[in-house]
Image (cartoon, rainbow, N blue to C red; front, side, top):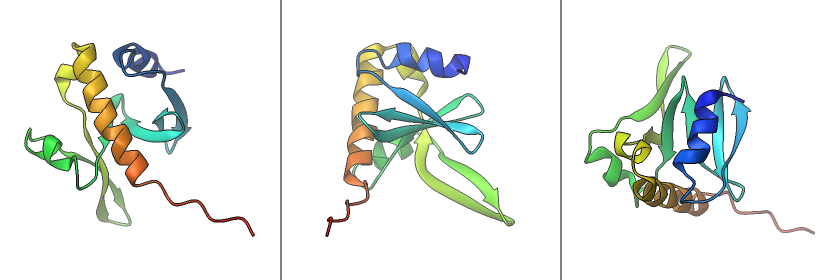
Length: 113
């Protein structure tokens, strides 16, 4: 496992257990089955939606972006604030907000026939 991912386990210890799954050259960061974080190039981005995105944009934190077929694609994951890496309680608070955003945006499960 990547050293940065191992470090994130400590960062989010006050929030709860996390797991990481490789995806597209980076990692998805999960808690209780919901992806609330994204790691690319050892940089953490956290899930946003209409309810919590302002907490990121008000601090000037940019969204995760990549280029696809010459166009910039922005995802609903924003750069994590630096202070979470020094403050476990702040990390837990930001993780909780992003985890809740992930739950709100989870695809509804299809009913079994």
